[in-house]
Image (tube, rainbow, N blue to C red; front, side):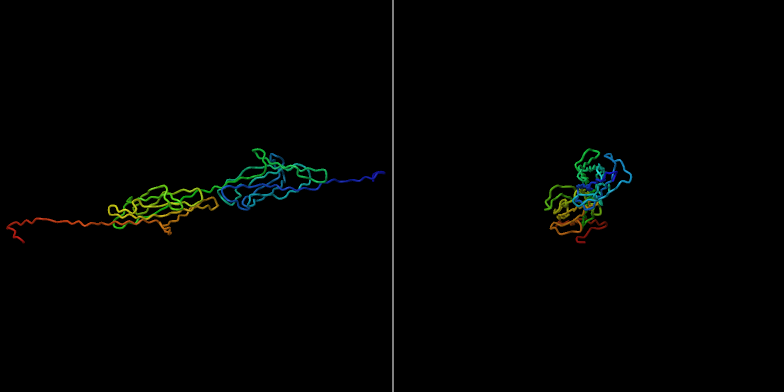
Length: 292
């Protein structure tokens, strides 16, 4: 009571409001894993990202669908609140990833509707490149390539094997083992081994090849050449840690698994010819008696 007047003192305090800052992770090159990437959000003073003392910091990780959300924020007064959002570089559990270094400034505008409630009236996003519609971090995954060697052996019986005596061909094929393109021809070393040049792979998949001996099935200069054809399948897989790896599978022409590629040749002399030997006898001191 003030003098002869009764005065009532009222306090106006609008209801609090909450808001959740969300975003999305888009990853190309391989499936996205749950909780794979980490994102950080901290309070800042303005759209320039000026630091605040005692600023609150929030962290979160992505869902398997790429979405992520920070903890709910409660607002008790009208105003514009600013946050800086970024991806933690190197936060993924796999190598081979190119991270998104974009920094977003989120401005959340809180307004008093004069009816006892605070409301979120605007949320805007800006980056160094300009305004954005939402928070999106885009990553790409590119594993390191791999290579495979296809070796073999030459087994020759009947004569000594010399370096470069025999040649071998590798053809690009398909899953039905239909020859397509000659890839390379190589010769044997002195110990009988041979190897084709390493084949490089930068994509996951199965790759097919045929390996044959030049002159296979023929007989030339006493050598019977091996007519065998080997089927080779190279399986290339991604270990999801930034590297491709390859496995070599060898089969015979009937698709029976083989431990290695071996061509076996045989050298043999054949023929029915005959030789007649002739000579002459000389005797000094007397005549030669017939039949002597």
